Length: 230
View 1 (cartoon, one colour):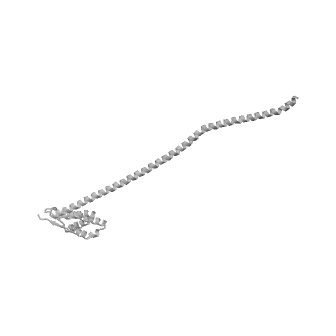
View 2 (cartoon, rainbow, N blue to C red):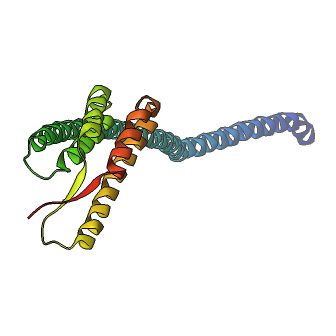
View 3 (cartoon, helix red, strand yellow):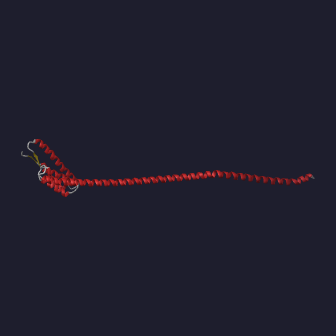
């Protein structure tokens, strides 16, 4: 009889074991799931800040590099602009200085030409040596030629041609020495004539003055050597 009761109760016991086993499985599974969630949460708490920091650091480095590149580009552009401004200003100053020097030089040459032209006229009235008017007219012609004042060049050359060119030797002076000085002086006059010709040739107008230059050269070449009476 007990055997039959035991046989009848065995399925019930086995069923309870199954329910217990299932309950234990679910409890274990929830425990594992909870542990996994806890681990995952811990990883998120630990790893996410690191990832965010990494992302922020990378973004910051990129932004910093971009900012540095922009600053360098601005510096380069600014330096180039400043350098270009400096060079432009320097060129303008050089041009102004060049123009100013040219104006001063031209004014000086004009004054020099007018001075020697007046001086030649004074010497023509007997103030100074006999050959002084000729050289003064030539110096004036040289200055006017440089300034392209061709009307004055023509006038001064004509006056030089019409001027008596002679070397006067005072009484008691050694004639050979005077002749040597005269030839040296004559060479200087011929050099001035050549310089006038070179200036006019560079300006492309020498042909207009070729006849006058030839005449004044002939005047200076054939000047007399006159011995003054005591």
